[in-house]
Amino acid sequence: MRYRSTRGTAEASAPNFSDILLSGLANDGGLYLPTHWPHVSRDTLTAWRSLPYPDLAAEVIGLFTEGSIDRETLREMCRDVYGRFDHTAIAPLVEVEEGLFSLELFHGPTLAFKDMAMQMLGRLFEHVLKERDRHVTIVGATSGDTGSAAIEAFRGRERVSIVILHPHGRTSDVQRRQMTTVHDKNVLNIAVDGDFDTCQDMVKAMFADETFRQECSLSAVNSINWARIAAQIPYYIRAALALGGPDRPVSFAVPTGNFGNILAAWAAGQMGLPIEKLYVGSNRNDILTRFLLNNDMRVRSVEPSLSPSMDIQVSSNFERLLFEMLGRDPNRCRAIMEEFRQTGFMAVPHDAWENIGHVFRGHALDDAKTSDAMRRFHKESHYLADPHSAIGLATGSYYKEAGIPMVAAATAHPAKFPDAVEAATGIHPELPPHLADLFDREERYDVLPNDLARVKEAVLAHHRAR
Picture 1 (tube, one colour):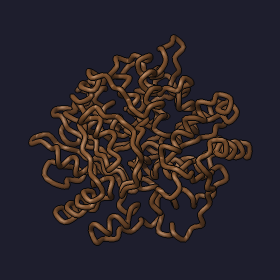
Picture 2 (cartoon, one colour; picture 1 turned 45 degrees about the vertical axis):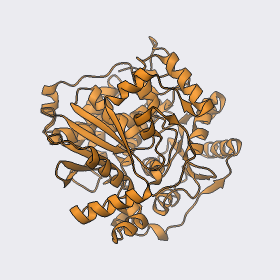
Picture 3 (cartoon, helix red, strand yellow; picture 1 turned 180 degrees about the horizontal axis):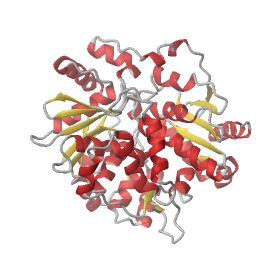
Picture 4 (tube, helix red, strand yellow; picture 1 turned 135 degrees about the horizontal axis):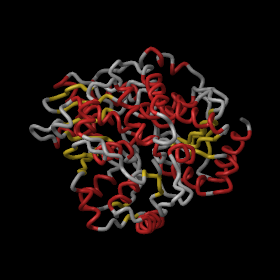
């Protein structure tokens, strides 16, 4: 399997999976995609029904690592990684109301769906870096959950230094502490005065500086790294198979800000999984829903909400879908993305927008409606959902159709957002035992201004201290 950039032409010497795993972002600023979508037959999908989750994950991810990492090595990695989750089903399905299922993706070490892929990335990086005798510095931006999942996956690893930028004062206390109470010497946390998009722009600027990128051996584990998407595809396939696939289609509702999680569901469809529709759940920062409804991809100010992991206006992974809907034309994709960065408005051609609309729909909930959704699902189904998961469930409930199972991605444990959950339901969700002392642990992080030069200095110093 080979890969190409959304902004560059396919080359005869296209990189393989191990290459793009370590580089994260393409040198031309684009995002990597496979040169072709692997096809999974109905017979194979049917046979996969009997596989335990780790073995299914190895089969799916293996389609993207072909020629780089063999299937048996992947199987060992997956069995080790997912054997450490606190639910034997790894990603269990819970029927919340008739025809509406919650796909619980928060049973990993940091209580968020990011663990499903990030724990695998830790093992993949370890394997490839050892094979190539290299050291990298991972730089990532987080709106709350990616940072803690990445730190947990890479803490203490000899061949990796990791720096995570988060928006100062704009994550929940649990989210922040899960990052800042990790004291391994290869971990650096930076709180940036700004919002998530500010942090994300800094990361992209560091990767765009080729000299700096080479000096620090930069790598990325945000969902701009294709390996993250590849490792998220298996749970959509597993959920669909559990509900009758491939003999009948399913729909998915996904709360999302950066578009990576729902893009993984779309990728599963490209591989042959029968999917009826994909529904984007948004909060008050509703750029994706506005786009899907009205072709309005216009950046507005990021507003803090009850669901801070979705407080995003620039959805990085949308570029991958745009590239596909433009007929894989890198020149058109590059021009549109560069104009978007300059003007804050993405001029998506009408035909591409219509094609996206054939598969995707959008639904947005403000904070009041998010609280109402948490309250309703708890009252009517005794189901406790965090604000993000509640948006996914409410979106799924709004759009569900008779005869087609609707699966809503539950992306975070309610204990990550205890104040919002308690205000809506009267229930204070407790942290699991391994995090019970989280608020007693010492925090360590640097607060830096919205100044790229200052942040780069901190990254370089951390890299040199390895």
